[in-house]
Length: 112
Length: 214
Image 1: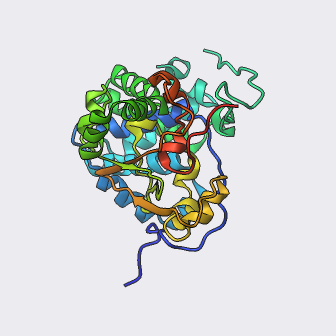
Image 2: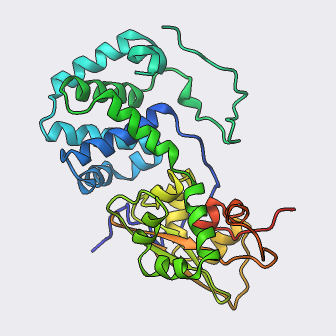
């Protein structure tokens, strides 16, 4: 059986680029939302990984780590019935209407 | 409220670059994060306070937590024995927050060097080291660390003699490894605080070894 794309151990690959960055507030919030919603039993770490793995190698190459995570958290919350896709679409439209950058699109200027 | 755009010259106080998207136009992922967060708050599932507390807990986790544990192990043989026998319990003794994870401490010796990886995703001893660096989650590190660790370590500037065995530990969601580096010669009589200062994050991942300053 072929292994799944995410099982990368032993695959050929190029040099390790020693890249790192300080996590932005929105990235830390994604992490916090994952930690809190799984701690409250809405889904599990395995469910997060199931969506991440289903997103496939293209998403791995084109999206950043927390971009993939928020996608997977969102999918699991919809599956858990926490909110509907219609509620989400309306909320995203509301967020985008507030402003063109993260600070102005966030209530309380990004601190709240 | 206007959004403050500080002139940071592209480099943070820790010396790492900010992500370019931090102050740029709102991305789809950022809009999704705001939307998910607000829906969760509106539905009464999480509070803004819980999110802020979770981020504060995240910010409090740094390699300094792991370094204190290493320094204690170097100066207290009984603690080191407990640490190697049950990493989770010994780390909790030091006040570290381990959650439900099983923590396995792997010790570097004169003939064995250890390093950690997560080939499947990004599992990492985050309670002791903070969030993992980008390279730890990269295809290159995950793929090659288990096949040609010596070459990968050399790319980090760590050239191990051929007689030193390299053991690579593949982490899982429930079991995290951390490397206990060897105490370098020339540190006799040092305080735990002095010792902790030479134990970097990369030493505890196993892509570096502690070096004396200067």
